[in-house]
Amino acid sequence: MPFTGFDIGIAVLTLLVILVLFAGIKTVPQGYNHTVERFGRYTRTLEPGLNLIVPFFDRIGARMNMMEQVLDVPTQEVITRDNATVAVDGVAFYQVLNAPQAAYQVLGLQNAILNLTMTNIRTVMGSMDLDELLSNRDAINDRLLHVVDEAASPWGIKMTRVEIKDINPPRDLVESMGRQMKAERDKRAEILEAEGRKRSQVLEAEGRREAAFLDAEARERAAEAEAKATRMVSEAIAQGDVQAINYFVAQRYTEAMAKIGSAPNSKIVLMPMEASSLIGSLGGIGAIAKEVFGDADGQASARRAGRVPPTSRPTGES
Image (cartoon, rainbow, N blue to C red; front, side, top):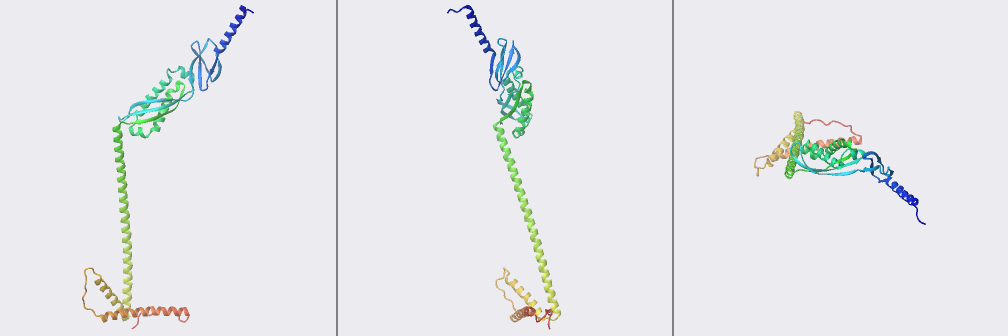
């Protein structure tokens, strides 16, 4: 059966309708937004998914990535406030929030963000000293993020993070900083040693003072005991106790002989002495001790037996 002109026209018309439908159907992938232009003018934004546009009148303008993106900041030299030159590089993270603004407010979005970040790095870091630069990296990142985000907000983007990766001072400056650090550590070590010596001397002085107090107290007690013994001997002499006199003389005699014998420059001691007097004095000492301790034991035994009431010992006998 031959095709007539009407059949051919229907086939062509069907083909045109199919082509028009395919031209008006647009698919936007996830994470992207497409702008629609009609005769070169922005009209609307296509969201991810299946969208329809007017064929031959509308066209896709810009395909904007709405995901967070990273931008490497190349190394650049920065002169600090104290005229030190350092090499700095970094990284910037941004996200497009408004596709039409990012597409039509700036030409070359990534290049604009890169130059804006590099300029603000020089501005922020150039207003700080080298020591502040090396120790306050978090503060630098916060200032950069605030400044760059405020400057890029008209472009419909959000700066999520600006980080300084490396700060490299010149080699000679690094060596100077190392010597300075070593000198500072040596200074602190000397201060600690001096404080330790001072503390040791203080403790030693306190120990000597305590020892002197104890020595003085011991001498005072010895003097009190000596005075008490002398007083008791004096009372015994006043009451006519010859044995007490013998005890006192014998004690002094033996102490003097002990000092003479223990002298380091004395090898042989030759001196007249009466052995009988010394023996008699020692005998007096033994008699006094026997009398004192014997009477004390007898009275204690009597008290335990319940026969003799406790009495006081007489102070002397003629």
